[in-house]
Length: 197
Length: 219
Image (cartoon, rainbow over all chains, first blue to last red; front, side):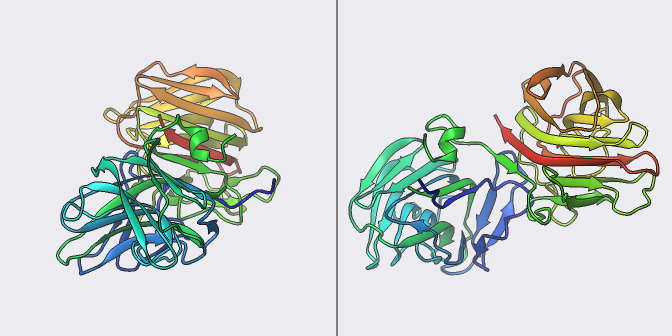
């Protein structure tokens, strides 16, 4: 069987590799701490976000792919968002965007980490994983089969989404953002793997 | 077998810890990942089969006392120390070329990006003037005490696979898959560390270090 696209990132070393694109208003720092990986921080202005992606080089099939990641939210309060997954657009990966992954939108919306899938029409389904969002690293994995998306937290299947499924192609995406000015928000990631199945 | 690298490396459901994998292939060192933080050695990709990266004084007239270090930090970005000093594994495929009078090469993990080894918090291996045998090289961070514990294997000029591992108080160095050295003096690092490759010139002739694989992970 022919080898399909496979990407792996350890987030180790001096700085983020150049094959990642970044949103200019964010900051991206390899951490000087054990198991720290990369820290992404959004700017202190309205609707700012920090995000890494492939600049719309979309090599992954959103109907037949999987990603594995280890990531965490650094801060939970305010309106600070968090997203990790595979998404069609490099913009925040949240709304009006084909994607599947995980999303958190601060306790003023939900205290839970959500499984997310979005379709080409711009409709999005958020389903609670039942996991109260915290500031610990978690293994976040999801697979898209074409008929559903399967979302795993720390190795346990938490959500099977069958609505608003993506159908196009996508790229790795990791986002932290905020909806209100006067805040900053951060998230860390130390592993990301994506491959077509 | 699963396609997932993650699933191959980690027990199911495990939250993986930090890992670095470097194959040193391509036209240049990846200076997004690595930094030449100090010193004056040259770092280049070798134009030879299995050559990896080559650490060698970069002109035709080596100078005694010159040294260089490649680690995951540089002068502008500060130290990036993502690996535990007490629960880690590092693996390196390295080849040293030279004689003991020419200099020394060391590699493993190290607390600081600087050239200093006294009190630098090191858990590595040494090839060259430190000992006639391939040796474990460790230092503590408070008294600047250095431990060089020799294996029974002569330093030579061919590739070997080196694996340094620590779990708690024991640091062991495996050479080509065989447990060869256990550090016995208790001179071990206590703070977060980073991978490093290092060379020092004793005289005015060339010696060098090749490395074609380097992996570090927390356990």
